[in-house]
Image 1 (cartoon, rainbow, N blue to C red):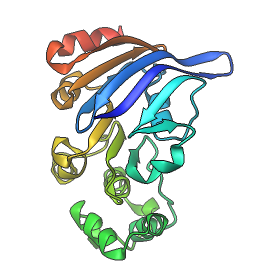
Image 2: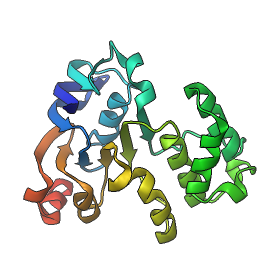
Image 3: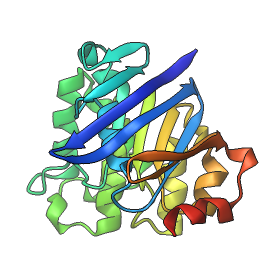
Image 4: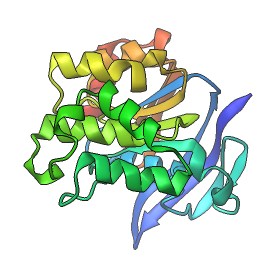
Length: 225
């Protein structure tokens, strides 16, 4: 079964084309890693898949639902970890996650579970603005997986994380999470290690779409030249 079916996807901002004619299929339980320089369209693609942006042309199906017409059907099944942590800085980690839990009809025990999983329980009552960038990223990971999504959309998910923190989040958003994943990355070696399928974008266009096993980090680096 396909988790993602994208055909001829296009999106523009005014006269600037952010994505043009992107097509791909990703099977359930697999990982797509998207590479490309800044401005290539990676974040735009992620936001369309998260139902936060509407495509201007083409067809997009996410977890069997047509986007944007059936976006309502899959929003509770998608977890997004973007460049911005999507947290209220004046609230504590526990308050932030409790708010999201209420939106998804989730009990407080799940909030405590994910805060413990990312080792933030001891700081769970402090305002997010007082936490380090690495701690904020761990809270953002906890928010993204709080509702146990089927699809994880991850934009540079390991940014600001030290080795100990990487070990904490790996079971939640790593290959062993059991989720279908789309990861935007600038790390050719690390990204390839997690990928089943690789999409390379440049100026909104697909420069490559191949199995990860067919690629080397050097071929990915060429996208940035």
